[in-house]
Image 1 (spheres, helix red, strand yellow):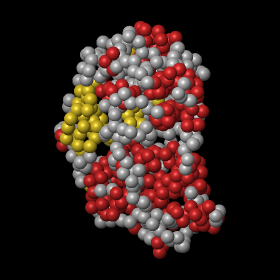
Image 2 (image 1 turned 45 degrees about the vertical axis):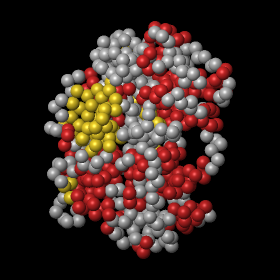
Image 3 (image 1 turned 90 degrees about the vertical axis):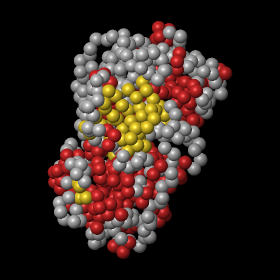
Image 4 (image 1 turned 90 degrees about the horizontal axis):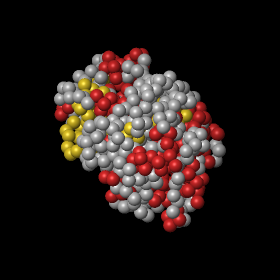
Length: 609
């Protein structure tokens, strides 16, 4: 496979914005591509998970973060590695100057979007800060490389199967974005990272500075993006979310061949090739690949937008589906993984609301080696039958019934896990339920406590907790949460009480192996016994224990009880240094009318203007 260009050679359509990149000229990104740094403001309705990702105004950022080396620089400020003063965890932090209105607006937009996007293939934002001079977005630190570096610096030849896994992960992320009425608008190799450098399934999508909300049936007009990946209708200033699918097709072609299909020495020539839409399928390369690989790329890099595949349609394409049919024991392995994670979910279901919310706080900041990330992600994706990036009650119930739980109990389990009460479980909620609670250390508990301490005075109060969850919890819910954990009876929950709450045993009701064995015999009586105890409104007679946990002697079911399996460490992966993102504008376009709010279930917004 050959390489037909380098970053430094890759020009993009002009802009007068002045920002120094890591390489290239002022007004360019790291690779010398001309950029535009203007972005659309996006607003949403908050829920419990987004409320946890707090924006804090601080006098001295050094009280919270210890900055280390710079990971990258570019048109949206820089990205630095930083250590949390509370937990000692490493984060990636994007920093922009408040004096630059364009950069500040773009970062606010990115924070506003990312705090509501919880998906296995999207980099996770943890918090944001603002002092008198700068704004900071704290993200998970991924330690892998961007795909651009794999392809053009390391000259890595990805196998067809590896590319399939990468593209499947990317399409899953795009399907999730589009189901939430968000279009990315800057998909490219620089904005895709492999969290675990050698694992193509560890893909992370980052840099949402140009993302915006859209409304079905209405067109966007701002010509934004990086020229090599931009769809022709974006250059015309009349496009919809399917512009992202054109970019996915270009990325797929580039990964399979190490050739950018429309790259040319000048911007005008590149634009001409894009408008022509002619793809070259060199026999020397493509003859070694599946015939369906060509049809897949052609179905995405298609000038007719209506005929271009959607993300959901692309996920169902023969090239992807056939590539995963021969996964040997994949089905059996997936079922075993579901049963293993079910053990932890049953433990979670026994926790009182305060602990469940605290576990959600832990999930936000926990490193992914604690949560068996790849296993959890595949189980989550397997339940997501509609490929929306979230799991409905019906989808979850179907998956749990396969593991031996009754419909009613599976529905009750869903209610407890879906803390945001949206009717669709997001990935953060799922992680909170399936993580191994025994692996949670004191520093992590301290960090979670800090998120719930709204008044920042060392204790969780009704007033402080209401301030944290002002968009998502009713006052009576907050009061009940405090009362459930206030063992001292003083009206507050201090750190010792939270620590004690985590120290209490979290044994599940049943051993998953025995559940699955019995379920395979279609024992309806056993299924009827698989309930959650008196606080779940079930028929099992129990005495309510502290923290809602049932001891083996309190459950009138003749089954062994076991603790959840210890999590297997999984290597972490790094979020894209936004400095690498290259954003370009084409020709000035007339301002568009602001579309009406998109009818997303968990968010409302203004769209592209």
